[in-house]
Amino acid sequence: MKHKIKYIFLFIIIILAILGASVYASDNDIVIVLDPGHGGDDPGATNGKYIESEINWKIANYVKEELDKVDGIKTVLTRTKNGNPELAERGLIARNNLADLMISFHINSSDRTTVRGTEVYITCNKNNVRFNEYSYMLGQKILRNLHALGIPYWGGLEPKIKLSTDGEKYLDGSMSDWYGIIRNPMYYGIPSILVEHCFISNRFDLQHISSDANIKKLAMADAKAIIEMAEKFRIDRTNNKLQATVLSVNVSNNKNGNYIYGEISITEKINDMKRNPIELPTVTLKSTDGKISSEIFINYLSGSKYYFDKFIDDLDTNKQYIIEVKSNNKLEKLISNTAKASIASFSSSNSKYKVTTNSNKIKINSNTYVGNINSEIKSLKLGSSNKNAYIYGEIIIVEWVNGKSTVPSAKPIIKLKSTDGKANLPVFVTATGTNTYYFDRFIEGIDTSKQYVLEVSSGSSNNTSKNKTMNVYFKNQNIGNYHDYKLYLNNNQIKFKLNTYVGNINSEIKSLKLGSSNKNAYIYGEIIIVEWVNGKSTVPSAKPIMRLKSTDGKANLPVFVTATGTNTYYFDRFIEGIDTSKQYVLEVSSGSNRNTSKNKTMNVYFKNQNIGKYHSYLINCNNNQIKFTK
Ligand SMILES: [Zn+2]
Image 1 (spheres, rainbow, N blue to C red):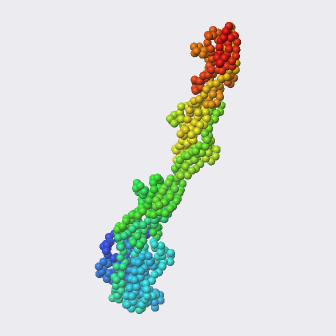
Image 2 (image 1 turned 45 degrees about the vertical axis):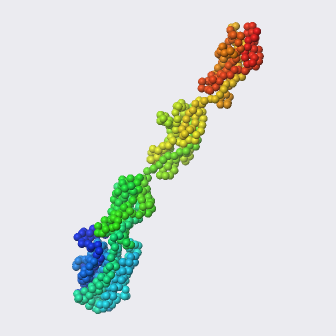
Image 3 (image 1 turned 120 degrees about the vertical axis):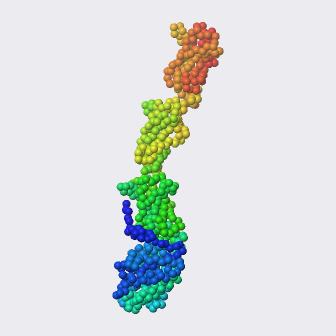
């Protein structure tokens, strides 16, 4: 990081030290700075005993004497009798004394000794009436007054301008003046006039500087014009403002950390004049919520530009910042002591930060991801492998990182979790496409009394979405049967519901015969028994129950039943000693406990027929009953 210190600020510090004891004008005085050109070891032009710096000193002092007689005018000299400040320092003296006008006094010279006459240079800047327009009027008066003393005009009757040739510009963007003694005060909004009274190199002009009395006449010509015009140059200092514009913002880093840097233009404005601040302003980075206020390093570059930089590693990246500039101008009142810098749109990033500006605010975002996870289930199915049930399906998973949908930087993690938090089962995940993943999980033996969610989370460790999880949203639907349970999705949960059969029992007798074993008679036969469950004929889920019952309800005899095929059963029942005075039915019922058909019974339908002799009785089936007849 560059911390440039321009020597101009060393000057400012020195000058401020020198001027520490200055007596400032009262608010109403018009301050006119009188600049005796050259001085010290710079004599200016010379001709024998005639030395320009000494003549200039005399003119300036005679002018001062005249102006000091006028109420409301205060004068300041830019140098002592033998001093020779740099031209920039003479401008600062004008600025530090809150000058309204500056006049620089000179005597001309030429190698061509025939050249003679007077000329005045004024500023080229026409952006304020106090500059070119009033300077022109003042210059013209001075020229006329000097001409009245017998000095011819040199190079024309009117004041002249001379433009800078190095492209240097004033803060308003206009071309600057060539003469430093005009340009430097103009940076502070102070018009300055350069008077070349006559030529030291011409024998006719020489008479005008040949005695103090004649020199005084030149000064009187100047002073008369200045006094007439002084009021026009008065600066209204009640409306001073500070203005700041951030010209660039970048982010970089060095061994001490990350920092933002750029250029900022800072000017003071008096009415429609712009000028440079006399002292280095204080620039502060402030959070918009007012919680953070931290000074920014600045250094003068050129024109109205300053370099700035600020370390940002300790700043809260969740906040937005403004740049505030505070004037350190202690010489005069500013209507507002601070200004919020306007900031155009910039964007800059390095490995750690992204800095953007918008609406005069600076946002400093950490490049660590601010993200979230999102998912959309494509399918969820029930499968089984070696009698082990599992759920499986396809899911789309994205990470939202800094506002953008991205492919997860690592394989996402899916868990099957019970809503009570007790079960937390890892799910197998594998990518099948850019954002699509296959997943499966065995559920055999799972606690069917609980409800489950599918939780998706990022597998990434360098992503702030890593701690973000989401439960997958499901469409309400059935996904299959797991044992006696219906597996279904509802309210974004996976739930188990015991299947409640709505069913009935049905049977069809295949044969009914009479047999005997060790003289014990029994009936036996084959029967087809089905359960009708939810409208479908099914194999009974448990062995059906058969009973031989008397129609009066007194006898209720269990019948032996055993399966012989899918829906076929063998049955038998000893009838030895049975009450032959009664009629009997064969009742079939479901043996299932968990089947709503369990309470359903039916009496077997018989074909009318004789099935054999039992002792002295004939057993016949009639009207679906088993009867004994003699
Ligand atoms: Zn000179």
